[in-house]
Image (cartoon, rainbow, N blue to C red; front, side, top):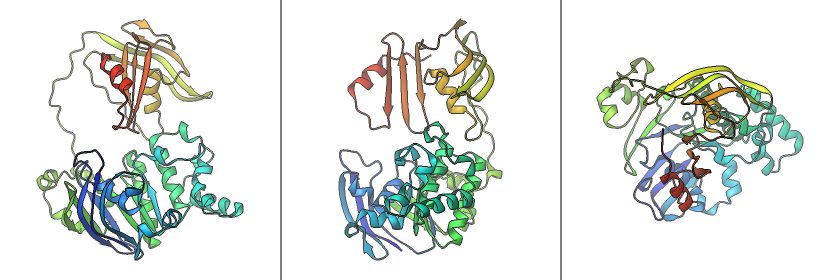
Length: 381
C-alpha cells in the first residue's frame, strides 16, 4: 500500500530538528501503524513525505522514493493522490478552506467534482456515522480546538480515501473525545482502511495499532507490536520518551515547588458572564489570581476555557461583569500592562499598554523584526 525506500529529507535553512535519514518502511493495506518518539524526531516529516507536502510545499534536500499503490507519488497528479490519501493535520486550522462546518465537510468532495445531491448525501452520512450532528451548521472559528479537530477528521472521512494520515489527532482532545477518536479509528479498521498516525498518547491505541514505529533523531530505531509495550517497564518507556499505555498507571505528581505565598492580588474576575453573538458561553465567573500563582483552567472541549483566556487578554469583548487589576476595574478597551497569550494553534499574542501595540506571532518560524522588538519590551506580570 505504502512503500518508503531509502528516503531522507532535511529542511532548508534549518538544523537537524525534524529531518529524517534513510527511512525505509512498507505499510500494508488495512494496517494501523503508529509513529512515536520525542518531539522533533521527524514523525510529522514522514507524514509529509507520504502525502507529498514534501517536497511540494516544504523546501529542502530530498532523496529516496515514496510509493502509494506501487505508483511513485512524484508521478501522480496531486488531485489523484488526495483522492487516495487523506490527511488530518496536528493544527486543524491550517487545513480549513471554509468558514462553516457543513461546507468544510464536503469541500474535498466538491473539489473532486461530485454532484450537489451526492455532496448532501456524503455530508449527512458523515455527520451521522461520526455522531457529529451537534456540530452541523456551526461557524468554524467560533469552535474549540477539539471541535475543530473533529471537523477536520470529518472532512477527510467524507472523501472516503483508502489511506488516512493523522498527525497527533488527539492533541486537542479531552478524554471523552479521545475515546470517540478511537471509535472513529475502529470504524476505519472495519472498513479495511490503512491508517498511519503520529502520536505521543499511546493508551487509546492499545489493541488497535498493528505496529509501532519508534523514531529517534530522524531514524527508525525500532519497529514492534503493541504487545511489546506491555513488556517494557515504565522506566524503559520513560527513557524512550513514551507516555503511559494504561491510564491506571498514571498518578498525580507531587509538586516540586512550594505553593506560592500570595501577598497581593494581581487579577480578579467578578461576576463575569461571557457571550458570543448574544449566546451565553460562561456565567458568573469569579476568581482571584495572586502574584506568583500558577492557575490551571480545565474542562471538556467546548466548555469555554480558551474563550475565558481570550477575554482576560482583551481578545474577546462580549462580556458582563468586571476584571480588576490590583483592585482597579479595567475598561474593555484598556489593555493590561502585559499579557502573553498562547493558543492550541501555536500562536502567541502579546499586548503592551505603554506602546499601545498588539502583536500576534503565528508558529515558531515567525521572524518579523517588529514581533521581536515588541516582545522584547513586554514585562510579564
